Image (cartoon, rainbow, N blue to C red; front, side):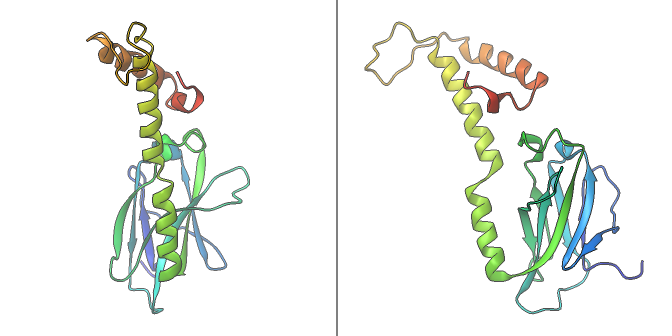
Amino acid sequence: MENLPPFGIIVPGLQVSYNYEQFGDMFVLTVPNPGTINVVSFFLNQPIQAEGMGAALYYSAPPNYDGMTFVGAIANDRPSDIFHTGFSLNPDINQLPELKLIVQLKGFAEIQELVKLAQDTDMQKNYAKKVAINLFNYLKSFDQLSNQSSNLITVPLTALDKWFEKFSRKYDADPNFVYKSME
């Protein structure tokens, strides 16, 4: 294939596409059904010629595509990686018909700052916290008899199984329900 861009993106279940739209220094690829995308593979087809630079991967969501959220980055010393997108757990993303993946060359210092910020706002950790809160609140609802000053909760042995059945039903109906209630 002639004139390959210096990088590529693989979205599981989709064909590899090099049909990027270029806007200045950004390369943009539109992908359908982001709620089904749990990971993306991002790789270099050739070394980055500019010293001290890496390729940063972002996404941008409709309707206006007016912001970019960092996904991950690659560079000559790590020319490929697989990134967990968190799209299926993100209520702002998982119902969208499409989104745009954007690649932009950035200096190492800026990439390091982006990585640090992304670690502080990990969508999977946030979802796990919401699930834990949901479980805690469910178990706490059984604790009517114990001493209120105690740090212990008394629950029936079947409570965890019942919670999981209830959680599964709600999740099957709406994976975003944990964001909508504190139940």
